[in-house]
Length: 418
Image (cartoon, rainbow, N blue to C red; front, side, top):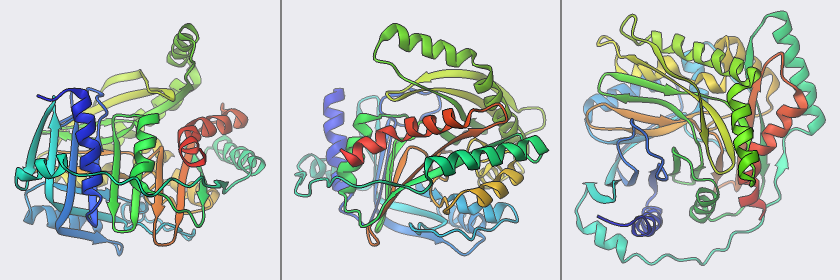
């Protein structure tokens, strides 16, 4: 049994060690305990076999891949898979060019649970190799000039235009996002992730490297999880800032709990997720386990609800993922119309942003996050990007929504701009 400091030191060495490989993935719960979590941390490195899709039929290809390989799979779902789920397309520029779907079987896999380190794939000797690994800090983080894709005025105008769609009855709610980006960006991805993860530790944080493509994620949100025959989704809707003053922080938390606007946004998405899960559920088993739960993270308080169901035996678990994709918290309601308006009002492809990454285990259980509060980086083109957004309803104040975007961006801006 290791102490927390020993585990933290081991995780740091393991990530730097894994980053030597062309492909690697770290999933870190940062000690947030959750009844559905299988491990505190998973570190996968190297490729035995991989599946990369950017030409349609991705979910079917993943189903075939998994049926041939009942082992640990780690992978990503891009938001652009919406075009496969629904009759949609995107003509926006994509400056990052992540694959639409990517999964790999690792050569090495290490799991950490309750202070115990286990080699799940590979030889136990890699523990010694990691413990002896010397971390190089040669490359210092350059301070970047982060640009906004939309000016404040443009953002406010677009929110007002979206509110007119709500007034007309096209939608009830839409998750509208804006991009922050840097060109000619040179970063050390591992060090950047470590800084972000120290500043903003969250339960679904992760580092995913696919060649020159990197996801550096401090996401607090679970998209979908399977435990035995149970599916669990935990959408986030409702955000409030933290305060350094204890009493004020507690008051902010209480206000969020009872904020009718935040509750109405949250319940719309809960209804959407319930509808999505119904497609995969045993009839009558979809239920809301927790409504309007308030959870505290270093940067923000969040309103999180939990919805679950029993998976129908006639539905393949990968079809259950497809049936719920993209996650309702990042689209809006009704989902199809919201995605059409996202395409009309946003300026760039989302790509991996508001997609998902995680794992499937040998028993067919899985856990996937939502790619928010995440830095995306293409080292070949030196393009770096992150997006932030929020729920637009008719009651919302465009200026407050803009301020909430800046709050969500604050940790990433701090890491990148120094």
